[in-house]
Length: 149
Image (cartoon, rainbow, N blue to C red; front, side, top):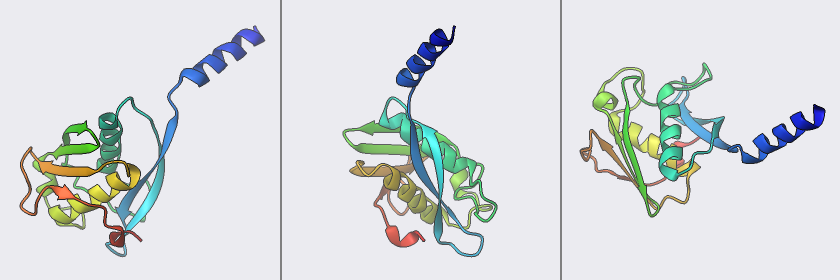
């Protein structure tokens, strides 16, 4: 019986998906600088799904009480498409609602892009859209380390 359980455990361990260490950035209560929170998220089968899970975690908000949400709670992820190291991500218009986030929508998009590009440096081009439309400040975002603490 012990050998059977050991064998089953070994098979589950070897066939199970590993966890990936991801860093999510949220603004501090005392400043607008972004501070990292480490989370272990299950690896998915594709970049689309990995980015989707990461963005959903950002929308859920911080775990630590000294951090504020990056995006308004009304924000929803509509779609993620990754092709040849290019990622297109569409968010709901909930990101435009003022409230819990200390950022204007365009700054929130830049902060979200920092989270994505920090965790997936292999992404060559990241486009963030609102309801499938290009935001007023443009849709292509680059990593900006100066926003991070």
